[in-house]
Structure formats: C-alpha cells, structure tokens
Image (cartoon, rainbow, N blue to C red; front, side, top):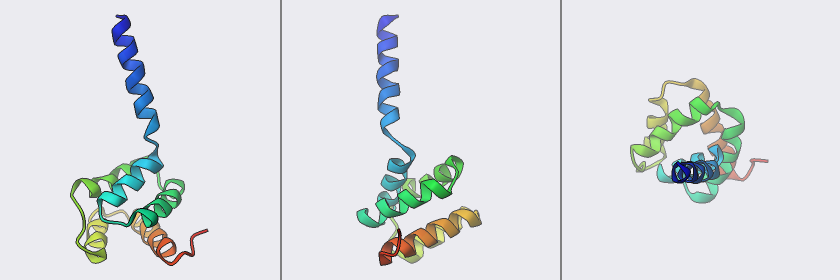
Amino acid sequence: MLRRLILLAAIVALTACSTPEAMTREGLVNAGIPKATAACMADRMVDRLSLLQLRRLSGLAKAGRSKDRGQFLYRLRSLKDPEILSVVSNSAALCATGLAG
C-alpha cells in the first residue's frame, strides 16, 4: 500500500511539471515551429485558448512535422475552430516579427 502511494505521488509530481505552456511549446516545436517562435507563441496561446483547445492543438504535433508554414496552416484549419486559427495565426505573426509584447 505504501509503495502504491509513493508511486502515485511520484506520478503526480512528474505530471505537475508539464504545464500547459510547456506542452504547447513542445507541441509547436514537434510540428516544425522554431524553438524561439514556439516559446513566444505558447506564452501567448495559453492565455487566450482554453485547455480543451490546447489539447486539440496538441493533436497537430502527433501527426508529425509540417513541411512548411502552408502545410501547418492547412492542418490548423482542419481543426475547424476559428478561435484556434485566429490565436495561433496572430501569435505566429507577432512572434515571428518580434512584435509580441
């Protein structure tokens, strides 16, 4: 019983380290976004999207790296969520140009 409690506590501690921002950043990098841009985008996106929307977005990373921005946008549109498309597109544009505050 004690072993199970210790194991459960360890799992909870490890899970707590993966914040929505870290998971979003990692997902963007896995989808082919440069690390610096992904970090900037993730910071903006976690403030503007719900956890459910961030989970849907994480599905893009599971599908593999995008060959180019056009393919990434195509995959993003396939989610059929205008708010996700708007937030990700705006974040990408602002972060890529250095205009994100």
